[in-house]
Length: 287
Ligand SMILES: [Zn+2]
Image (cartoon, rainbow, N blue to C red; front, top):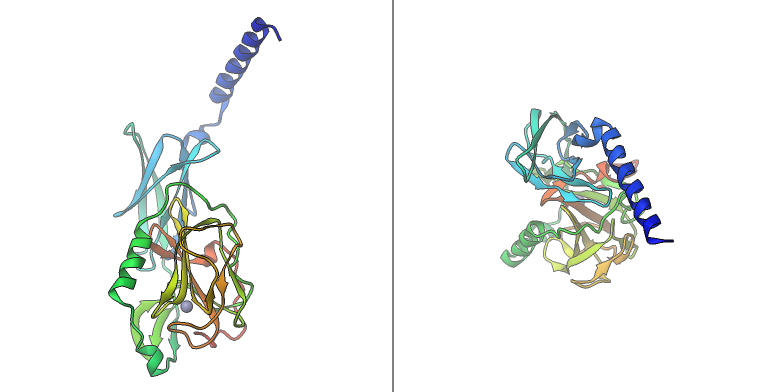
């Protein structure tokens, strides 16, 4: 192609792009948040024009990251312990522009659930080193995104205990809620990564048993507990569905099951918002 023709083509493309951006609907300039009405333990998904780089509701904020579609995107968790009500999501950009969006945090009822534990199991406690490792895991998340929708279930078993239930141990309230979901599984079933990511830890803990933590990037992490055996090491990359280890009953557990957790910016969120999980018909048989 002669040089003049290339130059003309480029010119035409430039004019077309300009026209397209003028014709783009006003919607493209706006931030979108989903869901606008959210339950405790769920995650807000915020999509904005590229210049917006942070979002905040009450005293919790998150970064928005540039995405391949030319917009910026981020996840903001609503904790089980947050207050229901009407709030304003404030989204900011480097040049000082801001967009305010209304969100409603709905009242969410979580049932109570008693777990019977043998004294030797109830007596297990985390060491300060284990607590420090988990804190570091939750606080350090990669800025590069490895995860994509939809997430994959880590195994196919039904759910014996949902997220958010208030936990009692041997009839005594623990003051804690169930920070993940439990799925029923035979001993030795492969446990798979819900999304691609980097293994932060794969080790034995007193309470968590053999456990794996994955950094999926841009706010998202996952953790898998009580495995009989680990099949992966820290620092390794894992694809979506990659095998992390095998189901078991190590740590504070009364029988083979998988307890797994999703963290968004270090806050436990409800995996059922991300993956459809079938409850077991007899939900009383929980661990
Ligand atoms: Zn559990």
